[in-house]
Length: 433
Ligand code: PLP
Image 1 (tube, rainbow, N blue to C red):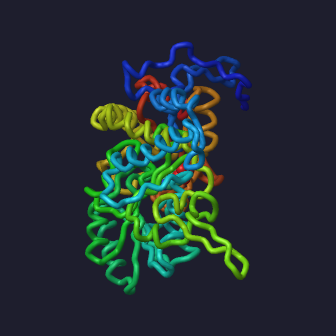
Image 2 (cartoon, helix red, strand yellow):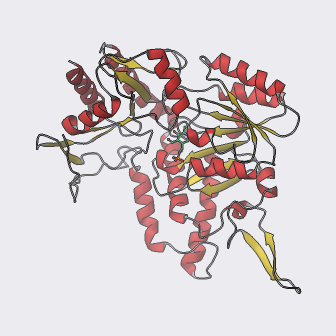
Image 3 (tube, rainbow, N blue to C red):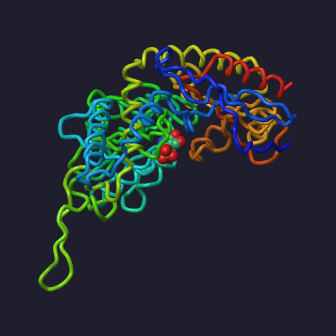
């Protein structure tokens, strides 16, 4: 069965009002075609890939758009306004992340970009310790320039800390960096970040937190967690305008070669008497932001940070916990569904749930959810292939499936209505009957 995306999607006439729900998102009421020729309201349950845009973020960007101008480059009023908003966005993000005095907030393209930037900035020969269970964005950037120790996939938060501690103790002297995730993009399970950071400190190592899946669901406070850097993406934080963030300690960033060489990163470029040019690079964030910055992306992230803070994570957490309990209980009642879990059913988690379905390849299952029920989920190995393969070994062969097995992932957050979870559960029951 195939369906085609309409050239002009139908949009709801009434978008939710941020005054009545500060965490309202766009997309409510969007209708999508079904394979049987009908249509239904889209159920977006793939927030872990990219979350919908917060209504407030969209409104803030729209209000700013007429005043958009170049950053750090023009004397005109709108250039100066844009420069001020860009730098204020940095301050907003710093407050959102609990940055310490002297920390830098570098605007990047994404979490992947942020972690690659840190890999480029870490002193040559840094020993990087990273769990095999990480997202590829956190697993892979280090190997080009550094010595990497891959830590085996742990089966409890306590084991994660013990494993890291053992590896940190055995690591040779020299700079060390432990890369940890805040919440798994496969199982949603929370990692013991504070305890891992404490272990790193005991052994003189630094810590970078991949908060791509954590920041949209829980407050992240660098100082309280005692991590050195945090990375996240705007498009998972309800601000899909092409920006991400690397925030934290300035020293490695200041000493490193600029991530990209070019205008904006360079302070003085002088002709040498004997030919050629000498360059003096900036020492602040601009050092790693060469080229024209994505001011709208940065402004959108800052708007999302403000909106989430103002609405309060407690409120969001209550909403997500209620739906997560409903989803997991509903899935548990379907015998063909086998959830993937690293730390067991009682582990604390964000609303990201992956599972295999007896008799179904995940790709086909996800397609059926879309074509027959208008539900958007993800299937595959979720850019965390070592982790997913380890979890699939646990579940054993899936009955009725001899092809390459793919799990299905359901994820949600702000603005998800109960009806979407219920529709998913009905659809899973129907497809497995
Ligand atoms: N880290 C985690 C835990 C993720 O889930 C993702 C994306 O799914 C990334 C890193 C990479 O994020 P991006 O694709 O925005 O660079």
